[in-house]
Image 1 (tube, rainbow, N blue to C red):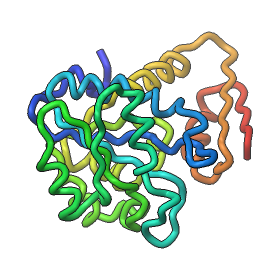
Image 2: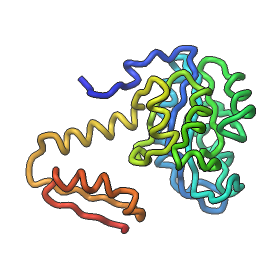
Image 3: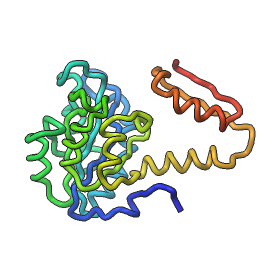
Length: 221
């Protein structure tokens, strides 16, 4: 039995389900050059929609500095996402406020909506309580399926989990179960390889791993 709640534990029908996903995909020439992250969250999106949930997707894209920038808009991800999910995906030009609220209110059971880049608001990375409340007002249930961003204490990844009933999506569930298998009582020796350029954002994770593995390799730093 999992120590965390999954979609198996959630009541989803006719409920507004805020789903934090990782859509921070690479782009070339205005097109997605690698849709691995999109494909990873498709099972969770489909399952929630199939169970009658009203899917409201939250995600960041790139590193906007001072508010909205066209090159960091999630509008360009709508078409490839809809293609992979195999269903229409609506889009709202903001992730909070009247624009987002109206788009969520228009949803029917099984519909899918992508909200604009959460990082267009400084409250996202600051985990600002007011921003968390503004996001929470749009949903009844929170599902985190963005494993790659779960180490960040941001509003849409950490704040919401304290504000709404919270569950792990299928991608998140699979990653956590794999970690438990590898770090719980593994065969020794254990080698951990941690990639990514932003080593500073992974310090807590690395400190935790040091005591659980025999060899730690950091790549991309």
